[in-house]
Amino acid sequence: MVIKREMTKKFIEEAFGGESMAHMRYLLFEAVAEKEGFPNIANMFRAIAFAEIVHARNHYRSLGEIKGTTDNLQICIDGEHYEVNEMYPAFNDVAKIQDEKEAERDTYYALEAEKTHEILYKKAKELAEQKKDIDEKRFSICPICGHTVVGKPPERCPICGASNDKFLIFE
Image 1 (spheres, rainbow, N blue to C red):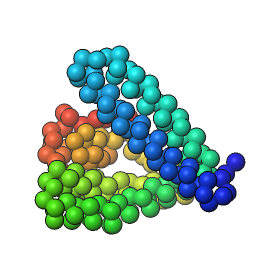
Image 2 (image 1 turned 30 degrees about the vertical axis):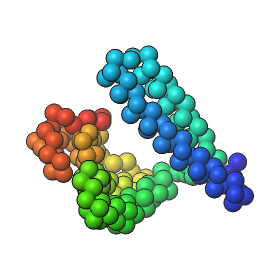
Image 3 (image 1 turned 90 degrees about the vertical axis):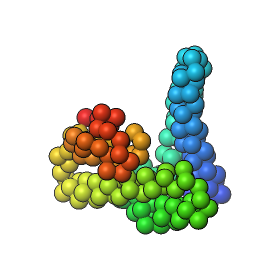
Image 4 (image 1 turned 90 degrees about the horizontal axis):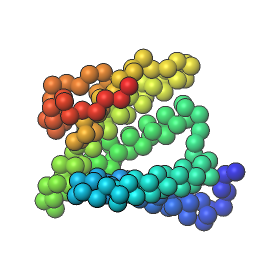
């Protein structure tokens, strides 16, 4: 069942965003609790983060936003395109003007990483429209800036300079 009334739709969209942010926030808090020697609190954060994802998934489903793969890829392309061409350049400019060095660095990292994401999604969509899967089976992600590499990571991340032993491998 897809929500049809505008006010309810806006509320559920806001709830989706809130639950998604809570999920990420709690995972970040989990790492801090673990580092500080509170394994049970860390576990509580991890468990509740999962509950928040359940809520977010339910909200997104009720909005009717989960479609077929090619449609989902187009949603990703549109989002990445907006981030690369509008959102992050504007955010980065403001951070520079306001001399917020950390925000400037973080928005630069995201902007550069998102460029690759848009390319990967476009390629995947082209193939999916032909009923073909992508050939790539390994993706390497820099945990510092989010740079995404198909295959093995480079010696150093071209965006932030992290060494290749830091990259996370997804196979």
